[in-house]
Image (tube, rainbow, N blue to C red):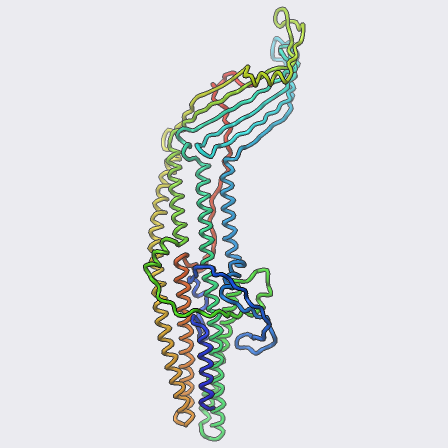
Length: 582
């Protein structure tokens, strides 16, 4: 084989490996799962992917026919992940669940309408000497309609109700038969100390609203983490494909050396051992190619898993070709500015601040609940009475000598004119004697607030440390890439020189094989350094907005617990046993 062929093969190998500035290539390339702590920070504007029919085979395998290939850009991969990733969809739906929780808490302030319509009959045995041995039958047709509401401010409650009834009886002692009754009541209850500034319903609403905000922050955080995973998987796939090309070219070089050694052995210019050694090298490099091809297929599936629609099963059979080219070398990051940005904008820090606010709300709530329960109670009732009234003369019980009919309209007039008013106004006071539940709850809420505050401090220290480590990774991987590039250049020069020496008989097959190995390893090291550098950039960008996902962690959110709190119906304040009502 002439030197021109080797130079052309080497140039092709270097050109293919240079496609990926973030590539990694060894027979076992690092995968995105091994770097799952690296995440990206922004959703890019997606472009349209190109669908074509191509005869691209599986890496390292012969062409068996045409397969559909998706020419995938990085922007399109990110767009597909945001639209299709089921884990991200779970968190997106979680924000809707928390919005529903806020609506549940607001239902505590919705007016409640109630109505009752009924009929009853009551037959009582003779128990009054005035009635003798006669039983009394009372039939009642009645209705009641009302509205009550808890006010969203001040924790006051009001109620308005209207009642009416028609009663018939067999008792000779009643003055009306049938009896028509009607009336309305307006009542209001206002706490003056406990529950006035904050009560259980408002506490739930405040915390549910903050939890909704926290769920939105968690969704943004999950988007950042998902986008980072997609970017990492994208560059890993590109690196794996470049590694397959490197291993394929390495195998071709070893096969060409076998061909040359066979010619030399046949003409007696080289011992048979050189041919055996070259054939063993071919077998080893074929194994490396198989490993690299398997790693590339695994990387392709990991990218599919992140971006595909679960309902589209045909996507598993489609080839994915990452066509995006990485940008050039970026300047080293400003560590102090990145730390300041992360402390101000990181979503997990913002969620931790929300937890402190919730703890402060609990402290305020339990502090208020320790106060005496002093309530202002007031009510007003208007009543009316009518029906068929018996006119009696003579001694008790008298003789019915006539009837006076009072219609329902007259009864309503009595109600509206306030002919029979009933009102009440007063205070109720209650206070527990001894250590109450609220006092213990206040102690617990205060401790939880301190814990939440210390948690923010610990999280800020962790954020600063993580950002500084990520910045050092960017710097060190950039230096590693420069060193690996220099090593690849020297390895290429050594192989070129060793090949020329071999062609003129000044070198051996063993030395040429070793030079080939060194060149392949140098190219693999360069690919790995480029992938590590690109991954460090992705990681550094993501960490300024969101923490990495640790192994086995899933994106989720713990929602608020909502308890239904129906509004009480104030009925006014009356002395127990006093004759009020209708």
